[in-house]
Length: 530
Image (tube, rainbow, N blue to C red; front, side, top):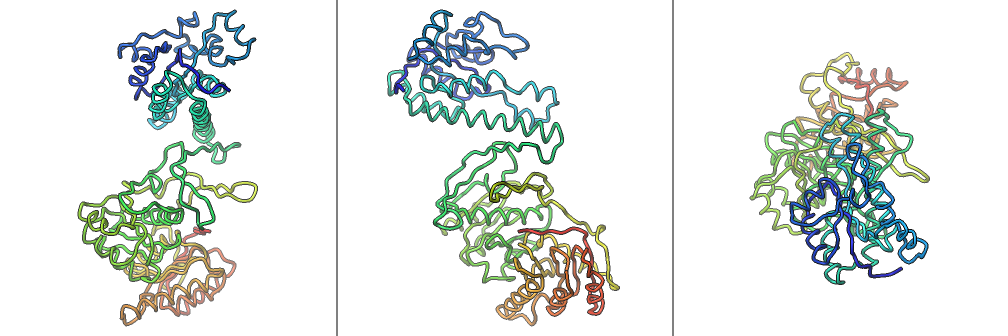
């Protein structure tokens, strides 16, 4: 392949006009002839440049409301011709086809049209046909043609033209070709997803087209011997952790991002509730509390398990102030996530150079839909997001004693948190704060016991007369298969139980609850999290 290819003719047809005038000026400076279409040609003329219309090049006018304008041998022959193939050159001469050395194309704004809520006919009209054909043709023939699909690449093209007397290098053309094929793949993926999921109403399309853009390479994965990177979807979604603004601190690691996402997903459950703080360690919450202020919520959440909180991730549902930042700075914390932070909070955290402060803006909607994917050997598992929620009116009282309003409030608080704890999950809560959390055990009884042990340790550490599990509500993410798990909760001092129900031994578990004087409600919904 030839390294340097002089650019003598460029075809420009873009929806996004950002940077177009600067690129055109650079091309004209090197004597490049500009060929263009429709709105792009108009913009170039308004910038003072001479432009040859594609219609003048092909001898055919744009027709069918612009659907047909570049789909012509004069255009694609000029792009696809192999310049050092004698037969190709002869064909160009015979049919009066001039070479096109640079193609600058970005496609109809399909995603933006969908996001605007446009009707189906408008969405269909914003499916580009000629653009992707030119992009793919140019990328295929990158040995001789440069293809630019992203305005962010204009600067690199201008720099090369200036450095090489109006020519592009093979290295740049290869890189731009890779970007171009990814661009059309992403574009077609978005269209395919829209047709299958939106237009046809399929939850699981026959083919699931997925494309994502590299946001950053990470230092390593879960362990130092693993490589890792962060990708963001080509189809925009909630901002979340992937789109958060990192105000300060070291580079985020794979584990930081994973844990911060777990914290944000949980605190988002409380986005319309009282000030709430979540503390996460290894993707499991170790303390959650709601209170009158974020500072009070943080204090209560920390006291649930201040041993596990060391080196943890904190997420809150309100902007941070300086006083709360001072409290958080009292122990080593890896990441703090908040919708925003005032100047005082930022100043406090600035003293902790290793602490990462992430500002997420509006918290994601916990009721949103979407697919979750998990890689397995030879394939992927797909499921809808666990966006299930239970209201008081949906609870079924199954014991002789009905819960009090206070117990129900604690039960629903514990239930919300149990949804975000690795199974088997047991969560004790009292007065808007977790009292003990048992996560990821192979049986439910052990989770109940571990949570109770943590509560006793917290009571001893803070000099409380009794653990906060006494008089608490306890949530189980799935039914109690035996009464032993419930009896462990009774031993810890719980007075109310919330669980899905549905076990063949429900009668045995209900009888044990009645014998202990507990109130118990069934949700009819399970929240396994593996």
